[in-house]
Amino acid sequence: MTFENLKLIAAKKKAPLDAAGKRRARLLHQINKQIDFASKFTPARAQRGRWFQQEPDGSFTLSVRYGRRDLELSKGKFAVSCTSTDEMIKALEAARLHCSKGQFDEQLERISAEIRSGFRRS
Image (cartoon, rainbow, N blue to C red; front, side, top):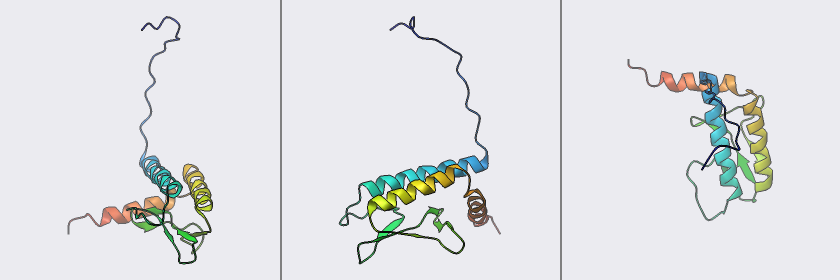
């Protein structure tokens, strides 16, 4: 294989992420994982780590989680009620958009500090 027909350039190093960027990337990865869970949902199959549960009436309750804690989506509201998996996927895509804009950063920082404080020796 030759590279005669390609334009070669020097490799650009990616700038390292700061702590907030790492938390945001981790949450985005988990949201993408939940979208995959929702798109392949079958009631008979239990999936570990799923953020949503199906209610007896067939609707779904979805919580966006970070470190086993629910994120506050609006003042005092921690979950989304969805009537179908398609609606749940749309809600997760909205959460992904909010996360990519950094709107969960304050909550992520607070939750991370709480988790870290649990590992301190006394």
